[in-house]
Amino acid sequence: MITTTTFPQRTRSLAADAPVDLHLHTFVSDGIWHPRDLIDRLETDGISVAAVCDHDNQRSVVEAIEYGQRRNVLIIPGIECTVRWADRQWHLLVYGIRPDDDRPEARAFLDLVVRQDEIFQELAKDARWRVERSGRPIPTVNSLERHGPLMPVHVLRAMIADKHVPRLKEAAELLVKLGGNFTTDTPLAEVVAAAHEGGGICIVAHPGRADLGPALTEEMLDQILAEVPVDGIECHYRTYTDKETTFYRGLAETRGLLIGTGSDSHGPGVPVDPRPFHASWSADLLARFGLQVDAPEGPVWEPGMDPNAVPEPEPEPAQEEVPAQG
Image (cartoon, rainbow, N blue to C red; front, side, top):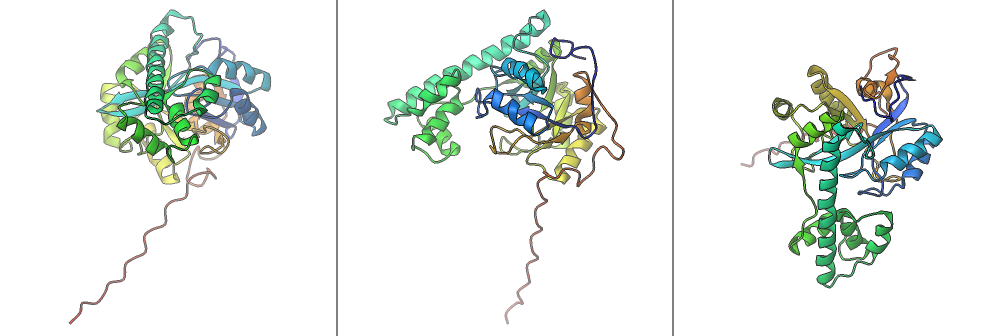
């Protein structure tokens, strides 16, 4: 069990259906939530346990934890690290290490985060220079800088706000055409080793999303586990159908992995609001933070329990055969 000052030794109890959301972003990466506005929204929605997991930095974590204590919302420190495995990028949620953790065993992971953050900041400076040098002014970045150092995604969004491109896809493509880059990553094994040294917990984020590459399959997961001891996978996610949730829960349960639950909310309705996932769906993960979840009266999970699950796609209508001519 993690024993930093964030998680006291005294166990806190949660009802089986207590709402939790363990994957949230703020404006220090690609979100638009101010940490305090996020906490206020969580309190309003009755979500008393959540995790702030910005991309590749933790600049909002301490503020969120401290403000959450005033609003009776327990914030678990987290981060979503951009990692590489099998020649493609993945996202890895690392829980349980605060950016102000002064334990010697946390140093390797925090140093890794700082290095990754510095690379992203340099990429953002380079991206801004390339876009402006091309004759495309992006004054919107001046307002975004008020929240802290620029990330590449801030430059991309400024390109949209200042009417140079319609969407993020086109912004990224234009930046690459101008000779720039908007991303970097660290080997999965290196991140997991450093996180485990510091007592962190490593959960593969949104394995069912295919926009970073092919969705995680059973074979891919087994290959990862043969090489890197990740702790779990995010089995409940905003884009999942019940079928996908059942599939990923099955993968996790048969391999003794922890189960994560996260909306990946980046702002009010962006792309979704924080979601009230049942605490029992990720009980073993929550237990690692000193949170004891009551056993549900019925099954922990079955299709139909999540009203926010994405509906299953309608089957394609059968094509009527056209009689052969002649």
